[in-house]
Length: 192
Image (tube, rainbow, N blue to C red; front, side, top):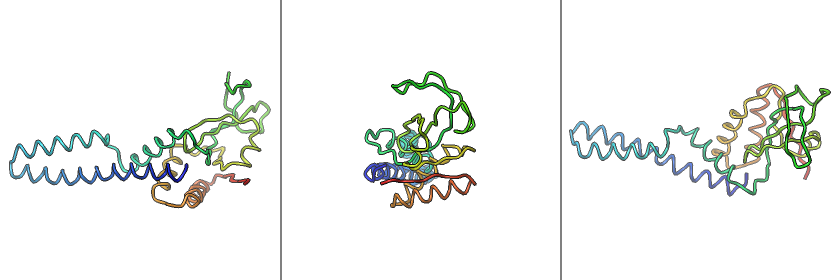
């Protein structure tokens, strides 16, 4: 994800978090208005709280961060696909235009009926099928485990890191470290 896209997402997150702070302030005012039995003020504040909460959809800070980075990534037509997640190995048939006619999961690349690996870009969500997986993994940053750490967990952690850390290389290092803490392995090879 480009620095510009990361900043766009951070700005939207900041705006939504300021609305959450405003809701907390309004809730305190609502309590005071209720204690003073000022019905007009009470209902006006309650209406504003309801409107703002419906805008946020009841999302926690973590869900706001994930949502904004997911939206930013999925709308990025110029995604550089810097970070990939291994989905699994499959047996199947892919024709020349990339269409999959059938597929069934296999344990790994070393089984006799292996056809391709499936990867998803952690920024934009693009899914690709790769026959020459060794070549691909030697030239990309790929989070790969045959024991499958849930993608949603890794995306959540990745988005939280993007939000709090201004340095993309540190984000990637922390993500790799977290991935490795699950006693899995990661292949990260870059050819520049």
